[in-house]
Length: 219
Image (cartoon, rainbow, N blue to C red; front, side, top):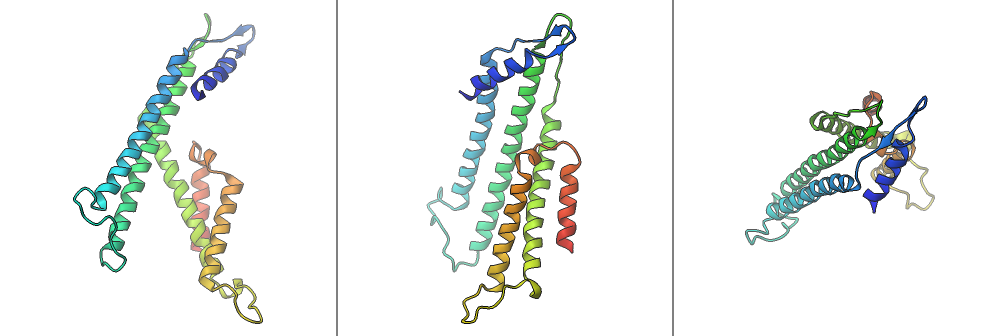
């Protein structure tokens, strides 16, 4: 129902644009909305399938090796680190491609089919340019979150930031206390700014925010 609802919303919006006495009409068929959504969803499913394949191959399931390396093995940390890196890169790639494809095709579809006999719009948004911008914003957002967490963590490790010791003991250890404060600081940042708008930001605001958090971390 999501494509149908989106089509109804855009039909109402694009059919009520007016320039003086000229009112636009929206001519995009419903099936075109379903086509864009299904193709974008297919890209996401392909990304999920590749992530599963990476996990399957990395852990040696395809060769009949043990499913999980034991904690005492020397290479277990490297295996999990490499696996996490592969999963993150594949997910990031297909997230960028799927979201960029959906936004690019949907904008071109909506505005190209908006107009009347006197006014005609033509949207030619290109996927490579939008994908590059989305990738940059995603990396800047990830760097902002990481820098915020570590900045609060190191700040909370300072002697002046430690909680008052209980009379009978049992207070939080400095490391545990710092981690809890870092988690709270990161959640506060997300609650104040959100993630959806920042990941779609096209101005320099996200770059400024990332640089500010890096300065905060450096201090």
